[in-house]
Image (cartoon, rainbow over all chains, first blue to last red; front, side):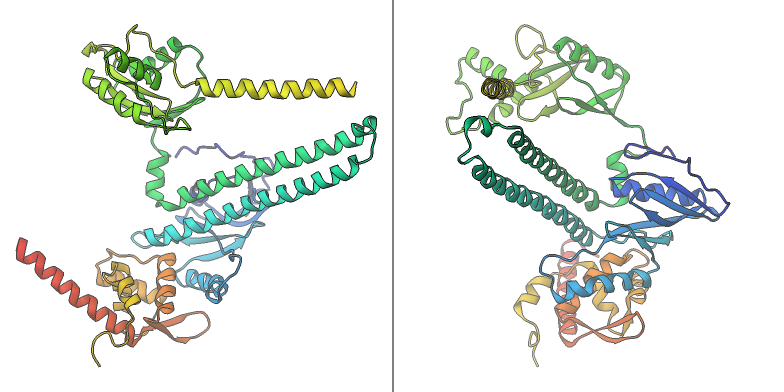
Length: 388
Length: 112
């Protein structure tokens, strides 16, 4: 079984192999991947005994065994009810009764369970959708409250910093106002806020990640993540020219890979039959161009202040499918990718025949980026002028 | 004592119609049983089709105790033993009757 090491470093140098225990260093974010790895170790003949600092695993040598592992936490919410306080003890008792052994818990209060895999019996702690929902929600709210905590920490320090800054700066003359101390102080406040925001974003991502992971069964997860098959692949690429992008898609189609999801930097494909395909992209601007050329009104919603309207996509799909183009995927609400077999000789959707590289850097995003950089440059320039 | 004497409307709304796991859990507790025995009983009754997992059982039993449909009748070192209450019996009988009607409707239209 191929072992994907996306989030792990396999370090076997400290391999104290006295025939009884071995150690491994691995870092997992995905709990499902961790469980699968531990199961693989059991098949190879090693049973988990201990774990330190969340990355150092100690195994004892046993015969090859089919074990299943579970990892769970028993945090209490802010204002726990009586039943919630009792729940940890009750849960552990129930687990033991059902044959799970509680191995240990790590520094982050994750409890590790282990059981022999029995065909036909439950091999997961949460094997019906209802309890999986509750379990997923538990993790999500934990990480969301951590991220809220970051927000509050940041607010407190920023407001305190502002006040302190105002007091310090009060009564000082111009030269002192921009002294080294004050600069360092400013850097500290900004740096601290930046760290808080990064942690906040990280916790939010983790909340979403674990929620999605716990909502599905192991089999569903394996299928979704294509862990064991090679029917999907992901690639990181950035394209600046439409022609390169088009060639990239066409080459993949010839090899049998079809895009499933696209983003600014990454493309995921699924395997299909090898065929020669033509690819085009459509956007709101091009759709409107077609509409005016055909004499209809442009798709423009005056109430759509944020520009997030998706009506153009409905029209785009109609136009494309009428000509014989097949929908592949949509990139946010900026563009849609269509394909058609070359042998079908399908008419081009937009005149000119060229595939526009739309959505990679949309007009709005580019203008926004330039404005921000310009703003930053102006502040930096003014600052430098004053401090000289 | 007529039907529904013990049961609040809230409980009826929450549990009727009943999920399979709830139904079989209540059935299994006509006699005092502990967690593992409940799992085995349900597995046997459904010819291994329904396997009550640890988390499932734990959530289910907790909810049923909270709604007073089952109660803990004894507890030695670590095993809790549960049994159905009068309200629980009331509820399961209502559900059995509903299922009988449901089955009858199906057979009327599609035959046996």
